[in-house]
Image (cartoon, rainbow, N blue to C red; front, side, top):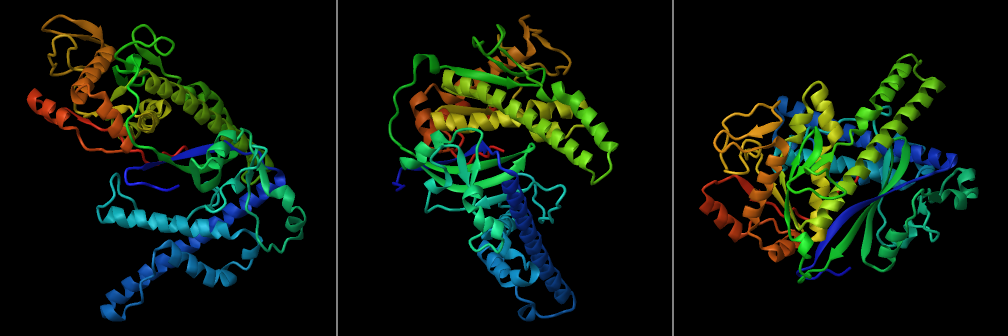
Length: 483
């Protein structure tokens, strides 16, 4: 697709559950093992090069006479692997070349992240030097890259994903059954993705086949163009701004109740999927402890536990998609708090487990990319904004509020309200102040991915006398992983 000066692109992930045959599953596991082998080989090669240069520096060797630096680029790692594969992996012709290419490309990406983190160019927590992958604990995964032939990935029946087979395989069984092994059956229909690719509105950048949650799945990285220009005005029902207070007792509390989504007070029930299956998980864990390692019974129990974890994750994701989709459809702007979800999840005991079960980070992630796709605004309020301590009626701020207190009672005006409902109303009011009610500008800015603050919001913040109380974040339309 041609890109104009003002044309933007979005990259999204589309996941399909696979139903491979036993022969196809054996091929996939051999591919994943080959990718892991190439990954570990590249890590060892880079580590040996760094260790040798460190020893030479300690011995006083001049900088010009040191051992040459081993390049960390994907091209250099792939070239080095092709030169050494006949010696280190004599079986290399039995699997597809994409398996080894996937492993070396993953090493190049991991080393690039490590280098950027060490130089301070990468946001977030520090990224350490990549470690070797274990066969037992790593996720079997392999990535294929083929941009020239888009529709060749999808079967015309709309229920198949192509599996790249070795071009010159020495295995007679693969050559004989090539037509039977080439297409992996999908549980869901690929009709929507097929139509997008066929019409030229989307391009498949990468296909990653991995074993997650006890099932094989194919994740398509799809890139499509976003046409700029004026959009139709928002419906009157969607011009409202809603404040969202995420929590554990309730998944979220809205500043206004929504029929079919919340209760009369505005609470969205927490599905607590993990809590419902926790007794079953503990039973499987106890049975696994009594099994001998390497036995068939242990392998069967491991598959059952993986399937249960996958069912929990899928149920949680579906519920989250229902909630976020309804919010984006009903409201033109959504205000949320910038919570430290990672820090909350590291707490020991039931609190950390409840934070992980609620998936508050997934809630914000889905709202981010769905608002960007719909042209809505996502306003992120600063985490130090006292949403729970502020009275929604008079605006007085309490100096201290006990965490166990679920009802907010203002000492100045006597106003009493549910703690979460009051916080949601304060978040919604702060979001409206930052937005300045300029909905058309919000839609245009969120669609193009411009993260600059609007001058109206900056002037409102300066005139209110509360610097740093919030910020307008029209989240950019970047890649959204569905894993």
